[in-house]
Length: 582
View 1 (cartoon, rainbow, N blue to C red):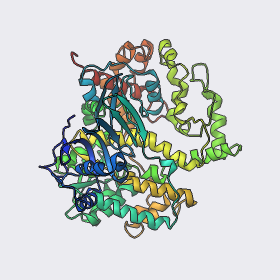
View 2 (cartoon, helix red, strand yellow):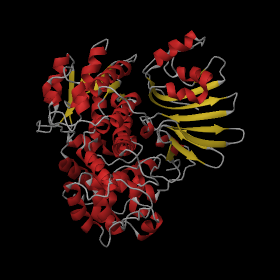
View 3 (tube, rainbow, N blue to C red):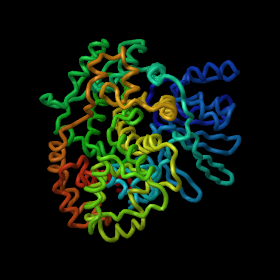
View 4 (spheres, rainbow, N blue to C red):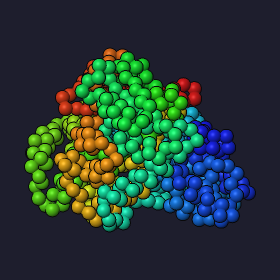
């Protein structure tokens, strides 16, 4: 057991492994326990002796008292392994929302685990063999939903789970310790409760023995974090933002700087040059550990890079606000359509049009067959345009042997259930958190910031806030909007804290020059697909590789199949370089 540390708290004394008083417990941990001060104080009052000021050491002393039930007291982002020498057991644990990764390779008598796919592959005993079902999911979602990875021999420990390993008998059990859908209803004024919870979260998340900054876009979510954190921060908090040459309309730096000036934050900015994206593209796909076909990931990489260059190794970011508070219209449409489906009605006009126009032409000769529903399926990801295009087109590029290897697996399996659900809105929230938020947003944010030795902290995915919002949603009918804008509880909570020009600003989102970037990438790397690894390994036909190498970009696509194929091709090439003997 070992780890390589990015020192954030107790810079000199917090080196790992960490031990309890008699060294019968051994811990390695990635992440932060945000409420460690309160936990440490209480444990010391009960007689525990600490040898460091590290946030991770509280886990050992809590475990001495409560065993693995101590997880319920931990507030933070973490993946850790705890060796209990007296009991002859190991616990391998991942945080509730999955902010920190944990990869596993299992055999009949061994388990290898790591925070990085790269570390596992370097061991030399893991076969590099693509999993057809995971690859097919990837081409539909633009990432591989957990617990799968692109490789047959590697999986992820799901968020909010732990492994219990009994060493003498070699018994391995996996347990879930937190369930978003099972949370209790919460009564009270949503606006007031959300404001108070966010205020407390930001106070906890600025704890560090190094400078803390904020990734500021000018939108509601990052602005809310900036305003609340700056108010609590004991020093001067710096803001970091990205933009584009020439300041096109989708460049948000002016709004970000206006808020930074209002809050007294020094403002740092970087322009995302196309040439820099091209030069860093292979490296980013290596650092992400998973293939993630999100071209805007260059923004994550660049904002953490400029933060580190300015001596700020901790960044707060607004990731998760749209998923938790419903900032995406298609998520609302999915919940509405699902309720209509349960009620046996045709659905609202927008959904009826979708069903009549899209599904009528969707399942042609080469399209993925819509599987029979042996259970219950909400309306979910089929509302995303890239998912629909993959259903129609991707099998045209697969080899016959790859299609046969898929068997009866379908991209729908992720949101097909064996029993109905009680709350469609809670189910859809859980699904968007398990998919787009976890595997696209959180995953690449964590990996690309850590690649620059920066720790990314996400107040909006703090589990206490998630519990509050889910509980409120169970007991309150959320207002349809806030003066015409989405996320009414969040906007109401920030009234009087943020200026009106931020609260009432229409949602814009991070909108890079996609076509320009796409064409530049394919000009340099497109040839990789022509006879490349995906062709050689039997995923794509030779004709498909040559066709996709041109960089096809159908109208209406966001991450077209050609771009997904290019990301996966480069990911395979970069990961294979790690294999011993390669």
